[in-house]
Every structure is written in C-alpha cells, then in structure tokens.
Image 1 (cartoon, rainbow, N blue to C red):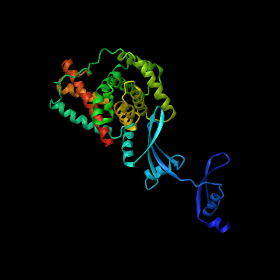
Image 2: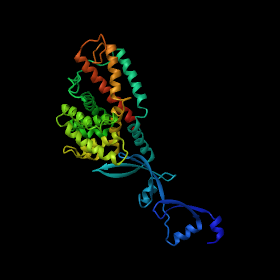
Image 3: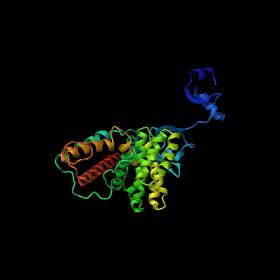
Image 4: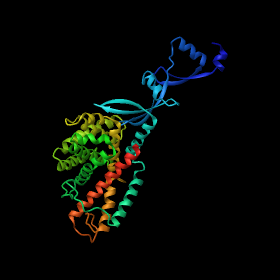
Length: 367
C-alpha cells in the first residue's frame, strides 16, 4: 500500500482492543482494511441496533452482532430499513426467552412500560374520571341499591400499622380480576383454572409490596415485620408468602435496575403459572410479556406513587360522598349520618370504578 493511499484514501472506522482489552476507536484506509480482511487478521462483522423491552432491565438499546446475537434470516425478516430490531423478553422458569416483533406491536408494549415506569399521563386521566364520578355523586346517581357482595367490609379495628394498606390492596385485588378478564382475554384462564382466590392473595401481597417500596420502607426490617403482621391479620399465610415475594423481587431488582412493579407482576405470573390447578393455556399466557406488563402497570398506577393512585382517589371521592350524600365515610366530616350499609355500598362503587377505569386505560395503550 502506498503512502498516498495511507494519507488520502477513504477511511474506515474500527473498534479494536488495546493491550488492556479495552475497545478503542481507530481509523485506517479502506484499502488497508480490505488487505487485513483478506489476510484473516480482522473480520468484517454486521451489527444491528436492538431496542429491547425486558421486565427485569426495562427498556434498553444494544448493538447485536449478526450471526452471533441474532440469526441473519431473522434480521432480514424483522429489521427496519434503518437496520433496527424490536425485541421483547419474557421469562419462563426464570430463563429469558427472546422474541422479535414488528415495530408497531413493540410500541404498544413500550407504552405499557411507560405506565410501569412513571405513571405517564395517568394523573390527567384519573382527574377526569374523578370529575365524572363527582358529577354522579352530586346528581345522586351513585348506585347504592345493589348488594356489594362478599368483597366489601368496613375496616375493622386496626391492630397493625399497615392494616389499612393491606385492606386497600386486598379489596382492590378482589375487584380487579373481572376488569382484567373483560379487557384482556388472556386472563380468562385464571377463572377456568378456578384460581380466583389465588389471584386475590397474590395480587394483595404484590400490591402491598409495591406500596411499601414506593414509601421506601422495605429496607427497614422492623417495617417489614409490621407488614407481615398486617398480612397475617388478613390471611394466616400472608406473612410467609410475603417473605417469598420479598426474596424474589429483591434478588431480581438487585441484579438489574428493574421497575419494582414489573418484577412484582412477574412474581404473580410465575406463581399462577406453576400452580397445580393452572390449565395449559394459563401456563403459556403467564409466561408472556403481554400478560405481565398490564399487571405491572396496574400495580404501579394503584400503589406506585403517593401523589396519585388508589389512596389519593379514595380520599377525594370518599370526602365527596360525605359532603354530597351525607354518608359517614370515616373521614370526620361534621354533620354526616352513620349508615354502615350505604358506606359499604359506596366503597364498593369506588373500588370497582377505580379498577375498571385503570384497566381501561391500560387496555387503550395496548390497542
């Protein structure tokens, strides 16, 4: 190769390891590059940019080597004209399963990740729903005539610091399955498997954990013991199952910067999948990212922030019921009347309304 080629020829950018193994960028002439390839000293490698959605790591971008990280035929089938791949990761028996998808389908999943990560746009949607429900209350259109069923009770005497939190989580868990089945047919096999009670237990513990994490108390051993005590007051195995939840989520969020709600949803899905009563279609569905992500979004939107979510919603709406309908909702409004039956019915309407609206919002993002 001549000096003029070296000085003025077309350049090729390379990344090569230095003596310490660290990649450094170098420029060589195109002619030298071709000679080194012909001599077998360097190898020309194709790369594609992969946009990855992972329940553990969240969203990230990686450069994948064609024929090493991904098959060339898959690149030809799924890569965009700009050389980009869209990837979702699901976990089965704790092992990641990689799926390539079209950009449009991937973007639907990404919108759910946004809800998991930061509750994006949710406050605006919830405020609009609160306004609509307030109008119903003001017009005396809140349905207090139908029986609320077995799910609703007024809170009994509080014996633990976190009893109110567990009560909120357990009540929401019980009313959330119907909206999920209506909005996402992939959850219907939970009913077919007769795992409604398991859903109640798992969702209660997971949402209690998400709430505790958002309050930054999970790292406090004393607070965890108080949480377990309240969970035992609710269900005799609650504290023991919470230990399994805490170990599962702690292990996976320590290894990667994963959304706590995302890992909590994986814990629920994994336990449903391996349950002895789970039908085959539930086992398959519970391994899918589109089963886990809506659960994670629901948990985060309900308990992932003190600034919005279920507690915020109940506080506003229960006070509105007190003021407009004269029912004592336990918030200390003067001049309200004691009516336990109507209080329970009002709570039923508020919990069901919150669950329904939240699932509807998640389903809209998934369309």
